[in-house]
Image (cartoon, rainbow, N blue to C red; front, side, top):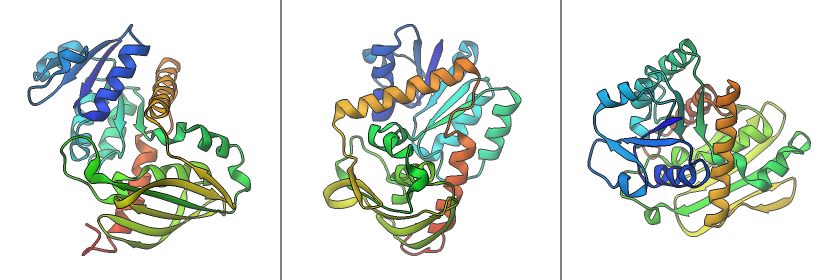
Length: 275
């Protein structure tokens, strides 16, 4: 298959490396607005959308900055191509309904890259999630140490993995109560299944932490780079299996839009500190 990357930052390069090493049968391309070093990592680069339209890629990976996800994904859906969007799906809901309609019209599938669902400990927990009544979820990091130079989104977007896997484990979110500012959040989620989860997010932390306590059981979710690669790889394998079978993955754009709507509604309650 021909696979196009729209954007080639640190996450895009990780996907490229894993594809190159584990799926060498695919041809990799990158559409970028500026000059880069894609050719050095086994990717043919172009800044011509005419070239992309002639190429007709089978799959497009949307790995550019979050605020540009929807616009580029819409263009890719019109090619038409299957679309993999890095998380979060966007920083606004505008255009996401049109994206879903275009994908449906062309019988193309979508997936959003919430790879924490492929964490082995969370997959173990998924098997018993129906009996869990309460959980505490913590993610604390220092975003100033993240690779690359970029503008940071609100903490609930940058660290939205935690909200996604809470919804995946315990059921859709019925209500959210708590408080948020740009760099930290502390809130409760109430899920359809009857479970409640307390989530604390901090991206200006002195100490790196990532864990879940489910009905009193502490589970450390920190991973090594090798383990992180394995999660990304399992995600890619799942996505390709869905493409081959014509089966919609989870989470897709529709699911991720529902989560994004909940996040945006919540942070809109705190217009001073929550932008």
